[in-house]
Length: 303
Image (cartoon, rainbow, N blue to C red):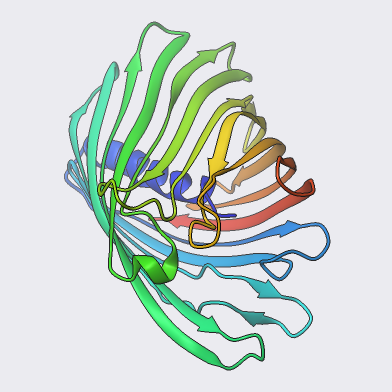
């Protein structure tokens, strides 16, 4: 399990403040925090689930945005409240908005994140550490087709280095979410996106950590004054993984579908907050089925 939506939200926040800042030469800032939990019902290999706090800071001036974030991602054993990693995954990103007007927005983001791991033996003793670095290049875009329709999205390429045999990561990855938005009226919109994430190795002799996920993601934002409600679904098109490459070279097929609700409230004083819950049913072709729960809370202050 891993968080996809949070990373997307942080990039979109950076893009939004970058678009605002391009209209003048003043500095604009965002500071915020998120706390997320991901759980599979019943006992699981990840010790019941993940809990993932993060903090971030964005600063924009003109066409440039710099974004700093600190993550903690790791397994949670709720019987003794231990975690698999510490709060030690920093990220730096810089975005340049090449085009920004009412009809077309085009930006380019480069960044690096460190993935720190602290491994434990079954008895809880220290089993060593690992640090993997992820380098990213990502264009994002939005094209206004007419007053009611627009096309937008982003495409990221990641390169992973260091300790890949320990962390189980492949050395390369692509991720994208892109689609069309229909503004029905001032209250309702409909956004339909195609999502792909594919982990692979540039060396044909390796197959560690390879996977593929394809989904249709459908959102229905509902604007109600200061409140925005966004019911959404993720419909799995194809998913397979090869995380057990050291023991079983055959990939495992899965089917995932999700229903969720995102609640956002703007206090009109620079402060905003989000609440989110999602339920996902998972079918593993080589194992038992799972029921998955996601919940998150976030707060942001813009100044």
